[in-house]
Length: 252
Image 1 (cartoon, rainbow, N blue to C red):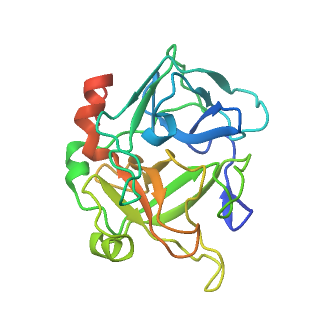
Image 2: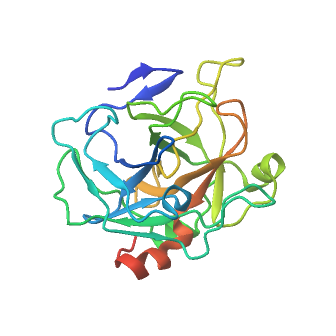
């Protein structure tokens, strides 16, 4: 089903993953992040991807950034809602409350290429996550300092024990969780991890209390170089269920 691609990260086939791209341009460069469709009119992403923007271009139904594929749809967002407590890197160099909602100008129709991901229930949000494995997909760079990759990629990463993350990264909030780099090709190789450009992309659990795919987190930031053993930090979506429901009416 999957083909090996790039630095051991797997290239996604059309329709296999739930992902949205959110892009905008400045005079210097194009900026893109990942996101997830959580209803027919709302996309979930990281606040640092959209803070200060009036609109971003949202693309659904495509695994490519560089070309237009059959079945894809794209349009500018109609509303952006970063979390009101969002704070970018300060003295601790980390993001806090890094979550945002992006509203589409009209409801989209679901099909095999465009489909929503389920949010966690309150019970799932309160359960322990360490030891779970999940799937992360995005268009991020293959290595530190690299460019966005035009094809959507995915990998599987385990959620670490909170204490292990504290030792590697320093104290972090209960609204976050960390994942380990995985060396699928063995010691001495660049491991699977998130990297620049993957921000906002969903972390989808393999199995949970309902035994159906559920979005537990979204990519916030990495604490070091991509793929060399540093933990990656995710916003814990379950911590923000009341906030999401307040703005969208959507619940897990």
